[in-house]
Picture 1 (cartoon, rainbow, N blue to C red):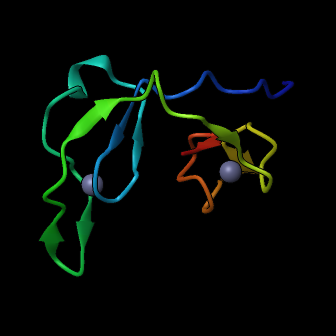
Picture 2 (picture 1 turned 45 degrees about the horizontal axis):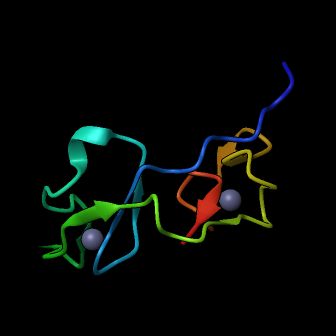
Picture 3 (picture 1 turned 90 degrees about the vertical axis):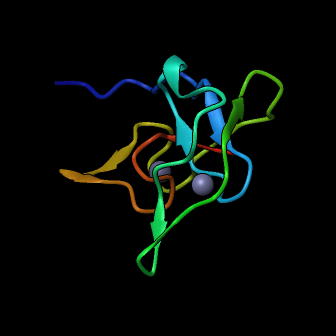
Length: 78
Ligand SMILES: [Zn+2]
Ligand SMILES: [Zn+2]
């Protein structure tokens, strides 16, 4: 199966920069946790963000059979 480049995320956390492809995440609290604490950021629209295609996975979101650690499997980085 050929890997395709992922579509750009729709939202991004204002604090930790975690992307999201879920439209319903917009203006909702980020789900990321760091050292047991939940991120206090909220998801903002990713439309105005200049996304860079992840160089590690070339935008495919995975390296081999593993999700890409660089971009959290999204294929793009804010
Ligand atoms: Zn966050
Ligand atoms: Zn990547």
